[in-house]
Each structure stands twice: as structure tokens, then as C-alpha cells.
Length: 328
Image (tube, rainbow, N blue to C red; front, side, top):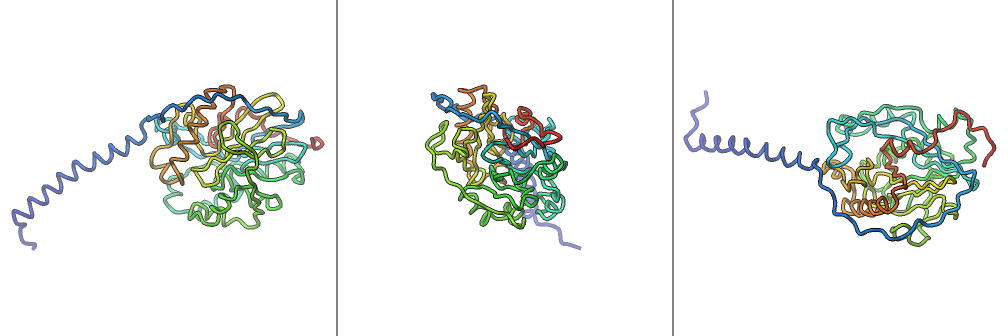
């Protein structure tokens, strides 16, 4: 039988209990506050015009959904409701162009279950996804000739953007030099991609001048149809892909700069926990958000396509059941 506690020890225990009773609610309140709306300051207005573009009349842009993850609006941006369920897109984009087709991101692959099973336990505990057919499976089913595919262009190399690379082993994968280095040195977040065999990495440079407020650019075809700009922060080599279509539409594929379009339209970054787990440089992400917010205000007709927002992909054509027409 333990001896009775001395009055001094009893007082310490009471104070410890009282301190915990205060500290726990305070900590929970502070954590909850990181999900509350907190708009970034309004950026200076963008005064420029849309750069000229001459996409060929035969160019097409197709959305290829490969699955979704089950999240909430509040998971995606500060001020969003944690009780508003949203499907977060896992979608590849096929651009058909006379100079060679591009696949922008891959979405989920057919072996995603096994690969996610190798991720850390806590990641598996908070990640719920519904897998569809992979981009490669859908292209094959549509009769697509993969020899037309010039490259896979990644907005960045996280698992949910590159999980289908193993099914596209014969296709070059374009990333920036910074992103290529991150694949090799980026810690556990890159284990998924490092585990995919046979990836043909190729790096590209930004040889072009400023574009829509970004300091440099890469015009893939030289006609303004696809222009890539650096947008580091979420990963060191993240990019934004601007598309100009033959119909005159302009789209901005912003990758994971934000997860939902409210991040740009309401200037709301991700909640603190998601930034801490996912962003390499939160300050750089904020800068990118403000640049895109200025563009969205100047060009409201531009379609914002965050990589996980199903609404942005609704502006694209679905992949036809058959892609057996001649190469454009």
C-alpha cells in the first residue's frame, strides 16, 4: 500500500490537473482556429493583357478522371466547412496537338492499392480514395496509339499526380531540374515515386521570358497553346500549366498551388496541418496564390483548374469512347 501523498505533492497534482484542464481546451481552440477563414492580403492588380496564342484548330483537351479522394471543403482551404463533403479529383489531362500529344499528370494507377499500402500508417489512416481506371487503361480502351504521346508533363511528382507512371514506361516524363532533384532527395513523400521502375525522367528549362506575372516560362509548342511557368512552394519544382484552346478558352492548371478554387478566389491557403505536412515552402505558395488571384480578377473568363477540384475539369471534354481518328 502506497504511503499517503504529502500536502506539497497533493498541491502539485491539483495544480497539474488544473493546468491541463486549461491547456487542453486552449490548444484545441488554437488548432481549430487554423481552419478558420483568414484571407491573404489583396495583391496589386495585374495590368497586362493575355499573351497571344495560336493553338492549331485540331488541338483537343480531354479530362481523364482516374478516381477521387474523400475529403471536406475545410480540408482544402481555410474557411471551408469541415462538414461539406467533397470529392477531390485525381485526374489526368490529355492534350492532342499536331506536334505530339501531352499527358499532364497521371492520376491514380492500377496498382494504387498496393502502393498506398506501403505508405506510412498514419497516411493510410487519413486517406480514403475511390479508384477508377487508370489513364493508361482508359487510353488503351479508347484505341489510343501511345506512339502519339510525346511526354507526360507533371505539375509535380507527388503520389497522386504520378501514380500512373509505371504504366507509361515508354513515355518520357518531363519535370523541372528542381523537381527531379526532389524526387531523389525529398524524403518519404517521394518514396512512392522512387519505387516506380522504368521512369524515363527528362528535365526542361524555362527559356522564355515573363508570362502573366511569372518571371519566366516554357512554351512547349512555340504557339502559346501550352505555356509552363515555375510555381515552387508545394514542392521545389511545382509548375502551373496555362492552356489556350482553339475555341479561345484559357485554362490555368495550377497543380497543388491550391486544392480547391476558393483558395485562389478567396485567397485562402490550406489549413496549417495540411501546409505543414504537404508544403515545402508555405511562403512561396502564398506568393503563387496571390499571383493567380490577381490574374483571376483581371481575367474572370480564365478557368481555374486546381488538380483536385472536380469543377475545373468539367470545362474539358471527356475522353471519347474511341480515339480512332487520324493523328491531328
